[in-house]
Structures are given as structure tokens and as C-alpha cells.
Amino acid sequence: MDIEALDLPPYTHAAVLTGRDIVTGLDLHYVIVWADRSTGTCDQCNQPISMQVDECPVILNLGAGAGGAIEEPSKQHGCGNWLTVDWTEVKPVARTYRYRGLDKDGVGRTGATEADPSAFAQEKYNAGWRKLTITQDGEPIGPTLEVGGSRPDLDTGNRTWWGETAYDQVAPDVTVDAVLAAARQLADRRATEIGAQAESIEKDLRDDLRKTLAALAEPLADGETMDERIEELSSGSETAPGVYCDDDGRWQAWEHDPASEFGATITVYADDLAQVTR
Image 1 (cartoon, rainbow, N blue to C red):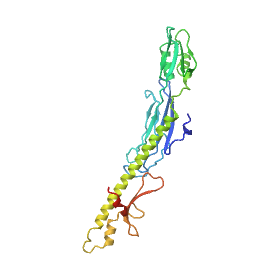
Image 2 (image 1 turned 90 degrees about the vertical axis):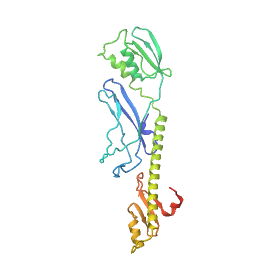
Image 3 (image 1 turned 45 degrees about the vertical axis):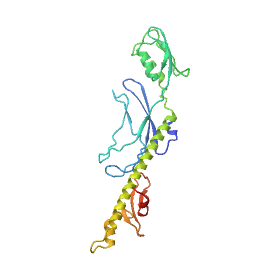
Image 4 (image 1 turned 60 degrees about the horizontal axis):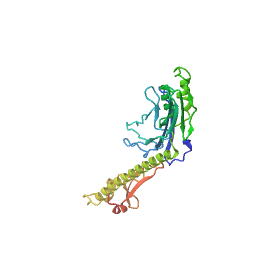
């Protein structure tokens, strides 16, 4: 599968992590899908952060004993907040392989397995099998492996032939549909987060605007002018987010849209408050 050629939903990405377990010698193959962040500001310090996440957010730990574990490197911001990236591993679709061979006593064996072919071949080698053929849909997926009438010395080239080389090209069966489905799910989740975020900001702006208008309606204090009241209640301007009254006498409240890549804003107007009850 050519990951880079897939037509993924906007703001989603995919990559294949590969390596080899240094203990077992088995090839490792993981398909990872992730989405760009849903906000361009840090939740804790409100500093700008990149929404676009081009690099795969996880890595393979190929160290001894790690077994090729998928790990998430530090995404800690300077303020200490963790800059989360939504990702998922696309699991291989279970495949059934048929096998036939001769065990260590030369007895014929047949059956089915869903195990990784490389791991299955290594298991049978370790059990002293003399011969093994693995097929899928009636076709061999690798050469018939034959080690002769007795188990060979582990230090000979037979081990590499038996347990690793023959099945190097048999990758886990991660389907294109599975990758696209995972990407769509991440894209939908991101869109939901952005929608919820915008709704929360709009609610806060409406609350601030209502409080401001209520305070504006209070009787003026002795010696207080309406211009002074307006100046005191205004927390923003045309260039600064908050509540303010424009040159046409229209009260409004606005904030930068944290999910916008192009400097968009979220604005509510006093004229619209009567239509919204919360």
C-alpha cells in the first residue's frame, strides 16, 4: 500500500512505522493515522502553537526488551502543558493462513492459523519441524521451507532462511478502506472539537455582552457621563478582543478563533442576543 498516494480527508495524515525487533529478529510494521490539532493556541498559556502536525506523533522503541513498542515522545510545551495530538494505529485485518508440513518426528501436519507468517515459521522451526508450507487462498505466500531430516544447528544460515528471510515481504494486511475509515473518524472528531470550542467561545462572549449591556442600563452616578460609562465598560476595541461599541453605536463582543489558520474571529452582536437564550 502506498500511504502517500491515499486521498485522506483534509487535516489528516498517515505513515508507516517499520523496524526490526532486535531480540526476536521479526520485522515490525505499523500503520499510524493522525489529525492536525483542533486549536492554534496552548490551552494553558494561550500562546500560539502550530495546528498542523506533519510529523508522525509516535515512534517505535526498538531497544532491547521493548519489543518495538509504539511510544509517544514528549509534546510538552514550554509552559508545561502537553500538546495533544489525536492518533490511532490501524490494526491489520485478521487473515487466515493454511499450513502443511512435517513435524520433528516426520509426521504430516495440516491446519490453519491467523499468526504472523514469520512468527509462525519461527515457532515451527523452534519446535524442530522438518518442512513447512504456508498458503493463503490456496497459493503459497513463501517458498516451502525444508531443513532436512534433523533440526539444523542454530548458528547455521538455516535459521535465517527459516525464520526471517522467506517471509520478509509478507506485510500485515492493513487495507486501504481501514486507513480511510480511521482518517475519517479522526477528521470527524476534530471537527466536533472545533465546533464545541467555537460554541463555548460564543457563549462566553454572549455572557460578557449581556453583563455589559445590563451595566450600561444602570442609572448614571452623579457627575458620570455616558461616554465615561461606555469607556469603563469597554474591554475591547476594533483591534483588541473583548466587548466594545463601534462608531455606529453597535455593541459587540469578539475573540480570535483558535481553530482558524487565517486569523478569523468569532463575533456576537447585541442585536442578536434576543434570539439566543444562552
